[in-house]
Amino acid sequence: MSYNKTASITAETINPRVKTFNYEPCGEIARHAERLQEELNKNPGSRPFSEIIYCNLGNPQALGQRPITFFREVLSLCDNPALLQRDEASMLFSQCAIKRARKIIEAMPGKDSGPYTPSQGVKNLRESVADGIAGRDGYPSRPQDIFLTDGASSAVNLTMQILIRSEEDAILCPLPEYPLYSGSILLHGGTMVPYNLSEAGDWGLEIFEVKRCLEEARISGLTVRAMVVINPGNPTGQVLSVTNQEEIVEFCRKEGLVILADEVYQDNVYVEDKKFNSFKKVARSLGYNEDDISIVSYHSVSMGYYGECGRRGGYMEICGFGEDVMDEMCKVASLTLCPNIGGQILTSLVMDTPKIGDDCFEKFLAEKESIQASLVKRAKTLEKAFSSLEGVTCNRIEGAIYLFPRIHLPAAAIKAAKTEGVSPDIFYACRLLHDAGIAVVPGSGFHQVRLLYICKRKIGAARRLHTKFSSNC
Image 1: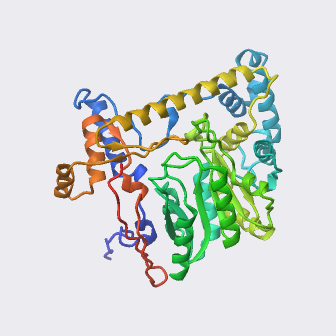
Image 2: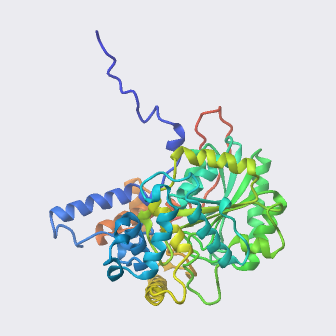
């Protein structure tokens, strides 16, 4: 008997949607950086640098940011609950960490951190998150509206699964963008409608630009269902004013759009004339309730002063979805059974930190303020450094943990890039990696300028997004 040795799965036979997007923060330059690091490990001194500096992802602890002691103490005790029964626990851990860990373990299925939990997350932990949101905003939050998730990324993907029905459904997204959004929209079969942030206006959001993009999308036959807003901005580092947020709320309410509010950098604000305000808070302050506008807000334990990226903890709060929709979201969430328990615990701790009077409060506050001060110092140092370089311009950084400078490459570099068959921004990023050991994301990885052409295709066929990239890096 003979067998067909042809591969059962090839790049030509996989889901075509997978091939329609790139995720450059973890793309080829990042992979090549890993290969160079392996080379350095085997042959020290083989390059003009001793290690790779990874600036392609927001990954604070990989770059030396220390974890918050209180968070790690509680996580340790929850993973080793037997320690709570030992007399020496009080010598190793603060009393507030012991108290919090006991409360969390008591609420766990089986009184342990190992079993599955409800798909939305442990109710007690969701209550802590809801209380934290209410304390932050001054408006009520309900635990039944909270989904604990494996970071904000899984929350975004879950939302797209609910919103997108076909390629005729579209989502408004800012450019430059965090490519999670374009990737998840395309992967779930929808269409991304970009609106451009204003580089000349310090990466501000101009509502007339969003209106123009919405109208053009509707003329093209698309049903625009939601608008993504990243505040503070990733990768652009701006913080929206309340006035600007009010314009967005009014616009989305009038047009019947869900606001998808990426608020994972809410604890990263570096300028005195700006402060973070959640979109839910802004909407409630305008007098709008859940019957008036729908908002999904995302937060994560990866950034802020906590920087616990690998813990994969986060939440989304859903306002303005009916109970029937929430039931369907719970059904989809149940496909992964439950979010990881360490991330659930850490998310509750981030939203319910030690209070005045707790024995660990002063240490917690000192660690938090030290990290925040360091982030501010580094942001300002980098901003000043970029602005002083020849051929580089850089807007003011107001928040988040990124700068998005414009690099004006000389004609010879652009010609060399063309000779090598790559875009100028990729050419620059590769040279920076090879000559200095610094891994960055090319500007095209954030789609800084993007032209969208809507093409009607047969169901199941890949849509094409034609892109025009600037030389930003």
